[in-house]
Image (cartoon, rainbow, N blue to C red; front, side, top):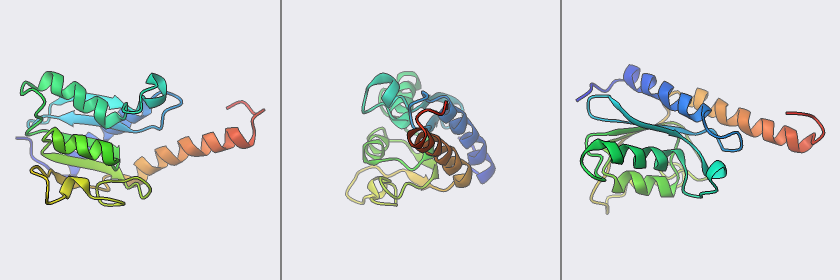
Length: 165
């Protein structure tokens, strides 16, 4: 099993940030990476909701699906860690729990839709059979800045529609 430390989580968050930057141009830049117990990358993904016209195409869901396809234990991602740049929503928090991920590491907090402590705390609900270890706020300033830049550009293009973006 890979040793977990702040330095390792920071390194893994770099991979998630890179995946976020690969999101479609109309998609909110959120990135996710799934690593096995040895720290080997199983999958990475960026948001593709707009690009795919799919409301479930969040980075976390796409990365979980891809990791499950290569992990070797069917849909169970036991021993795996999901690293994502933004606190997961209710759908993604449910998928994290159902996939039996052991750890969740995320960057920026999401006070409007966050389901890992901000608005709800789905993954640590005592009524659930599986609850991953959670570490939030890893490189949160950098993760939040990526999102803020995306939304600032969108607001600016709405305020100045004749100005090329």
